[in-house]
Length: 439
Image (cartoon, rainbow, N blue to C red; front, side):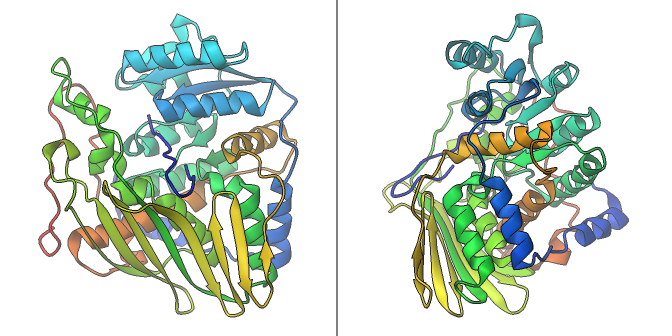
């Protein structure tokens, strides 16, 4: 269901566990520090051939909107030894559209029989009950923590779209499931495609080598106009219409700072090799005030503080008629790294500019996952790091919604649980537009 949006001037793509579980999650989220040699070795391991070959892999897709269908086609492009065998979505028309697209464009490996097409709330149960080896999770973000946990418990490898949760309860669920996946050697790759893009990999390797000195600050942006909007269908229940228009409901999308800007926040965490310790934020709703835009904000600005007195400025907006900007800048003691899709450059003491081929990262991320599943590469599990980046974005949203400065250790333990536990057609999830100081 998720759609990665390409904008000008650059292209980018729950249950509360109790206090003891929250403390454990906070401990798990302590930043992992990589030495330059270890980081370079990990990055170099990703710079491989463009196709994965070997053991046949059967793929199930949960969430058959534009992003799920696109990810399935990317998985087929990543390997001739990959077949899509099951589809699931709340809405029958989306399953049908995905089946048609895969049959037409799936290289003969996307013909999903009717008996392997599942619809309605709980469609993931049907997909996970098939003999698929790997599942693509591309439902609205609010559904992802529980579906990820179910996929891991079903013994599946996972391609996990970002963000992976909309609240701290969901993040904790993801962290625990990612640990179970590690114990079972189930591979997990997430839809943060910059982590698999050659220009970004070489740029981060340069940072690890010390080419800009010690990273001390960063800026990141995802500024653009508006996105799609779905008018209510009178034949559907209120909650089904909220799911169709999921982008504009915090319980489903996490708001656009979480759903979209998590890409850029993830890059900053990657460059800093840490998650933020605290933040202060502002945000609001000025351009999109009509009811069809739910209750989310249309702009955010966050000041994140990282370990060792480092900081990052984060900005995102979705407002028609405004200038677009999607990039990251990392400031070091000896230079500055400028980053956007397909472009990386250092200005300073050690000038450098990325050049050469930059294979499609939307395909490479599936090559990397399938290589790991087949044993052609080292075991790969990105669950923890995307949970950190998702929680970073959630913390920024929480600070903006409330007008309160937030610390990581407080935010990660918060009992917030936005997603209903028994989803079925009926009334929608009630919410109001947050007002800082009152939320």
